[in-house]
Image (cartoon, rainbow over all chains, first blue to last red; front, side, top):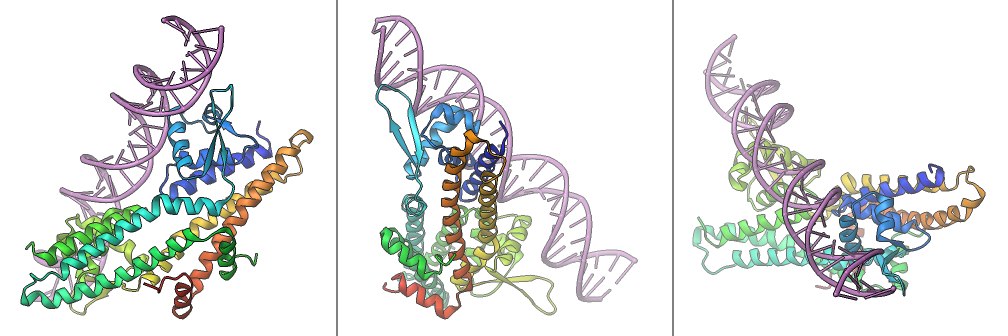
Length: 178
Length: 178
DNA sequence: TATTATATTTAGTTTATACTAAACATTCAC
DNA sequence: GTGAATGTTTAGTATAAACTAAATATAATA
């Protein structure tokens, strides 16, 4: 079938592929989420293989990753050995999940790296003639350190926001005007 | 030389490499920015080749990309054919530059894709028995459309913020507490 | 226990991307 | 104009990531 609904679905799946890739995830992962998101009922692994034409192995690993990020939920049915997957529809929740799972960790590494460099540039063993350079390093590294801390704080704040306050923030940004 | 200042620099450059890669840019690009950022004076292309041990061609293209994103500035000196590069130190400005240059464009594509799928699922040619599915699609696609619009609005708002209001937003997020 | 249905893991392949080395282009000095 | 210094482009290479196909594991049922 290639009616307009099917076109709508295919176009959407392609779009999700692209977004997934842009954010550093496998393209197939986005496609799989797209398929699950546009399905009225939970989908089995084999149904996904069919819908996105990707091997079973790839669907298996990608769907697991999606579950880990809180983007899909696995459902087990009694008297049925298949796993079924349905999509999380609350995208703010998804964003939080990804921030928590991936970004936060990477930010922490970044912060620790800058901290270390800053410590090294404050070392007691710095010779007379390098002192000026050391002060310069401290200045620059302090500057980026403050920036990273602000980002980190921002992420932590978003993560801590509940649904209610999330709405308030959106309003503040003018996001609800449309 | 392998004193503590040199270690600080090497560690920082490595860290910037990693961050660059994480955000979907070449590793060398981050390394190059790191080297420029920790240099008291502007660096020439050849100096960069030496500092980050990457070929001239690669430095050339990466440094151009950095300039395009507003992360470094090119300086020309009279009576000197070399180009010299210095780093932008205002990271909020950099974030804005990247949002404008890369993210915004990608968001627009995402929005257009969802719009198209939504239109297709509202097509007049949808048969009786597919109507229920069409309504479902419209619901789901409408949901993600609203989300994307909010994100888009948020990005647009950040881009429009001047330094003064940027400070206010940071304060709001508790970012200035540390 | 054997069989079947399913999911996961593994070994190998494909593909995309960023890199290197070298050719080329440009600009300046003489 | 020729030669030297610099930056850019290109052709080819290396590498990492994600995919496929197939083997393996797991669980359920008869």
